[in-house]
Length: 115
Length: 111
Image (cartoon, rainbow over all chains, first blue to last red; front, side):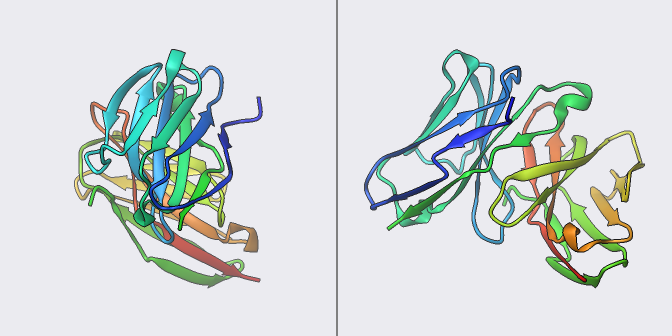
């Protein structure tokens, strides 16, 4: 197991285009999280899943953002009609949950640049 | 903002000195965790302290938690150049599995 994997590492797109990111968590982890991070700031919560169920979504997340986790395995985050303000690092993390397993394991992130 | 606050925002020390950073959070928590992030990379978990604990140690790390003040501190003793990174606290809100991160402390350890 090589950890949480995110693809692509970098994405450059033009304003108005749609983008999709993928996250492959640790295989036995039932919880999966998406965060957004801009330069000099901490990660900002976007959404999380327990298995395939999306249990919480940030109120800051506009309708242009959608996330899925089919069959409780990998997850995708789609941004429609991208705006320059969407430029950020998008981080995925997973956890097994419960007791000492509550720590998050992060992927290396997808850096999105909207031109 | 949903984020907690950390201070200082930036800290520069000499190798061998101790580094202390503080974190405040806003809600009742199950636990509080500290993470490290090297430039351009994902975050790495350092240590977890539960809401019923007041102090915890792991190697050169010492974490304290004061739930009455909704605050925590991270002490790194005998710092090394390799400790240069950003450090974030993450509070886990009671009744959820939502991790809220602070704004971070950027630590620079000079050799």
